[in-house]
Length: 197
Image (tube, rainbow, N blue to C red):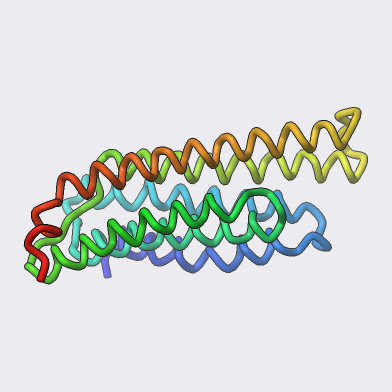
């Protein structure tokens, strides 16, 4: 297994760790811990692709495993956000529907001997999702600091409402990117849908 694929696998290994901290409010600074781990995992997504292209280490395994690791990262974060009351289940449902549709086309293409890599729209979708998660984790950590008395924002309830709204807006922007990239992806690979048996 080459270095880019190892980084992809590391991204998967980090998922349970940020989920653990995210769902453990009894742990001091748990949002900060989740933020650092998620940021590290997100950076591996940038790094593995950069190394693979620079050193000509692109593999079929990487083309499948890299987007799969991204999906698991995002789904885990969204599921935790739903449990914490930070977003609506609709965000996860629409995101998952897009991913299942695109993955289905990839599987049909693979059956015909073609590996379809992610396009630029898919990369924009992933970046918008990771950025939304990182900002939400940061905002929640600031609220946690406010609760601990380390920072003071004044009316905690009002600030919490604005932070929640900002997070929701960012997630819905990522949903728009997800749906748009999904439609473009399906259109570009319609031959596999039309010829599927």
